[in-house]
Amino acid sequence: MTQIRACSTSLLAVVVLALSACATTRPVHEWRDDKFSGPIDSVLVIAAIERTTQRRVYEDLFAQALQAFDTEAIPGYSLMTSQVELSRATVEAAVRGRAIDAVLVTRLLGVEQVEAYEPPTAHVYYRNYHRYYEHALTETSPAYYRRYKVLSIETVLYDTASGELIWSMQSESIEPSTPRHLIEEQIDLTIARLNAQGLLSEKQ
Image (cartoon, rainbow, N blue to C red; front, side, top):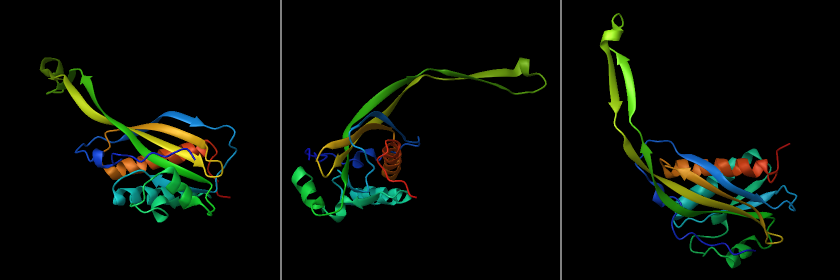
């Protein structure tokens, strides 16, 4: 199996932002091995997160979300504790002798601070309906620069039988309001894309 690198920065610790804007998570790059027929019946889900609690939340919610499919998700922490270093050897040892078709790993690639220019905006409103032409008022909001963070996240799926990469996706999340929000959006996106690629087993 291609070596899986542990995330040196917590996927979620950097995104506890005091922002009111809704998070937006979208795929920016996706690849699938066309030679892999699929679907997969079971997958070991690993969140490359240093904080044990956040890792458990991600892996548990992923397993719960997959209950809508016949593909079973096994949380990585149930086979590898937080004291075990995430590597090729430890992952192979965890899946050895078990009926696990694939291993899915999600990790943070980086965080970018973005600055966007917002031009001035004019708003016209009326003080009196009957003589609005005389009393029309214009209020202008000044221009300003808006700063926000963009998180780049990578999710990869490996075949445990061959050790080869089956599928990969890079996604971006803009201004996540809470760690939980980021987790839920990332899980929803990942499962939607895996299903669209025919990698999940549909319930009969």
